[in-house]
Length: 298
Image (cartoon, rainbow, N blue to C red; front, side, top):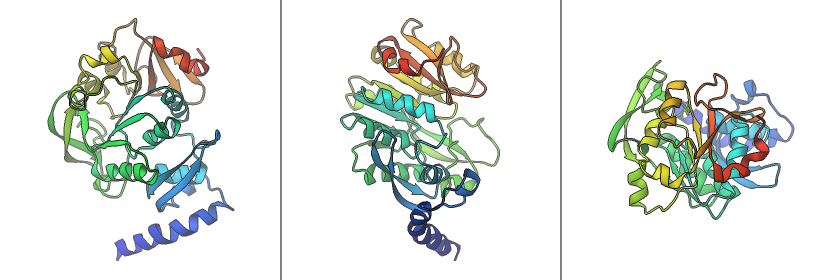
């Protein structure tokens, strides 16, 4: 009975009624989070780009539906920097893609690019594929995790619903990350360098990594190609220990480090993982610095 009521509310009533309601009503976040639905919806950016997102009654897509992609504060500056870098990137990797919003933006702003998206959690990967399909894109959607080893590993998340109907955006290969009400499933794991070789990828121009404290292991698994490709890197770095580990993999002269202030822009820093407020960083090769110069504030 509960499943039937969920279908009626989310897939029929919400899908049909909410687009009409939106024409007359703009709820704030505390209310909008309760007005969820299942189905695709159109979006238009302030600079005229159009695309669809598929909402599986997830909080993130629900908020974007009600508030608009430009008005929603979630990683707003990171998204703007990502979109700017995507315009001149031929090969783009979105690692820890979740439901694929950054991947969709990549193809929207550079239709000729090749986008590779990695998401190990099955119920979230389902939405990633839906977002690819509803836009008619050719994103390479991979239901695997990337790390510094091959095979399979436990993938942890908070609460049983995280693997069925919810999207906590907090899944990780790190057992010590967000341990409250922790559950796990087994997922396939591959080294990034092995994936590059198997798919004969000559160069990666831009990489986003958001894997909940496993960013260092992903880059460690990139091996020699990190130095050879020198991609622009957008990373979530939760603390100074992870930051130091990532610094150890990079040639200091090859990159400029920026902390991404989501309200202001790029703030240059010499140390990764020191910010307690903004955990996203841009590691920018010298050759790409001019592409993001308008975002640099300090």
